[in-house]
Figure 1 (cartoon, rainbow, N blue to C red):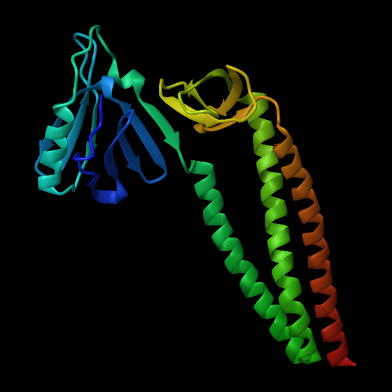
Figure 2 (cartoon, rainbow, N blue to C red; figure 1 turned 90 degrees about the vertical axis):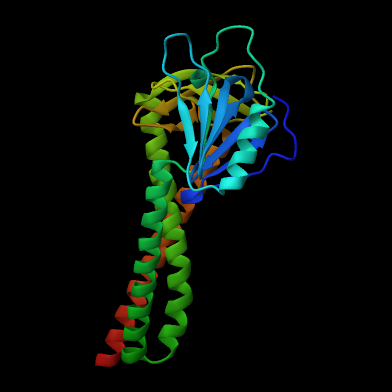
Length: 268
């Protein structure tokens, strides 16, 4: 399907965006992008402020529909007319749903990690403030001056070290117990495609691999995918993570010693 610049970009509820792209249509939702090849589209319907992309389906099967709500009504009608005018009848029966490609930008694990990071940052800030107050009251202004920078560096190092250790443990579990697949190259260099257990085609990025890529993914979260063998960057991550974890633990010990020293000085 050839794409022309006159087709508008639709913006809907929940930060969803539907636009025309060289390969067909692109439906963007928070945390993911769905590519709909032009050959997979049967028709586009504008229903007021809603636009439905109806996919081609084998004879007797109910067509799958991708929808965006809350778009501008005038833009929705123009979008549907523009796309429908470019659609071609396929020469053979097509299952449009099997042609969709899903790219996940934020997995469930990464969203959980972000929430935990926010709580960790808040807890670290409170801890540093409390230790600074205790040190300042008990031992004088020199202790807050020392505790604040040491506490900030410790929080960053310890958090990064624990995070990398958790990622390494998770990757190791997935590589041992996950679902193995061979990903095929896509039209985009460095991007491969694989089909998860539910039949959804997903993307995975890799550099320096051959025509096929052996991968493993988490059956509970198929977007969490790794190459079967750890690469150099993944090994480097765990080395750096271990170093940061050790630095963080040393920082914790330093904070404890400074606080004890301040309290001991106040009681002398």
